[in-house]
Each structure stands twice: as structure tokens, then as C-alpha cells.
Length: 196
Image (cartoon, rainbow, N blue to C red):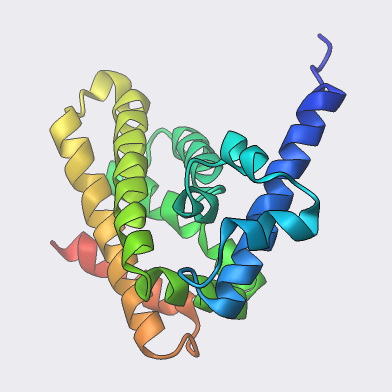
């Protein structure tokens, strides 16, 4: 079986999208979301303003360019968890994989969390994206459990509880200035979910 490789055009489109996202985030972190215009993002990259809108409907969408890909990745991780693992344990372990992003660059992670928390429009978009992720993970959890018959409502409650624990741990980490190691905070939050 041959592996399908993206065409030159597809690679160029992905490269442009990545460039826009990376440079836009860099500007947002440097000068603030509201103070950054689309023109300031596209002009240094030699990209037309209208091209920006082929990739992103809004500036908010640019901030969350990675979110859909990460959700797909998390769904795959959840589906691949050991079959005998309890649903709650599987979701906690799946969400814990996102800590790699924080470990890789804690300063950038903190700056991004600060950007979200200090920008109401981004906070609203983050809630929307988080709900999309919760629904996708709940559907994957139902599929994963198969014959054991986990009902969709229970799957949503499990995923929602873990996501809430994740957000609470992230809030605690942020309130401390991002100085602490996020892993033990997250482990404590997940342990508390198990006590419910």
C-alpha cells in the first residue's frame, strides 16, 4: 500500500497557514490581541489581506489554528488507550498527554494562557473550542467502550469532569505565575475527580 503524500499546492497552503498562525501569535503576545491588525500580520509575510481570510475567518480563529488538529490527536489517543482501562482513567491519561506542550516551552505556554485570560473575545472562543473538544472526546469514549454500553450522557459527564479538572489546575498554575511544575497540579486535580 502506498502512502499518499500531500501535493505541492497542499504543502504550500499548509505552510502559509502555519506562517500566518505563528507570526500572528508572535504579534499577539508582543503587542496584545486588540492592538494587532490583520495588516500587521500579513504584510511582513508578503501575503494579501484577502488571503488571510481564505485561511481564517477572524483573528480569533488564527489563535486556535492548532486546536482542531490537537482534538483529532486526542481522540486518537483516547481510542488507543487499553481496552480494560476505566473510562475516567482513559480520559485523564489522554488529557495528560497535552502536558508535553507545556513542558516543551513553559514560558510560551504561560504567555498563551495569559493571552486567553486577558482577552474576552479569545476566552469566549476558547469556551466554544473546548466544548467542541469535549463532544468529540465523549463520542470517542462511547465508541471506545462499545459493547460495555457507556451511554453518551455518562461519557459527556466523564469528559466534562476531567476537562473541568484540567481547567482548574491550569487556573491554579496561572495564578502562581506559571512558576510551578504543572504536572503535579494536574495530577492532584485528576485525583480529586477520582474521589467524586
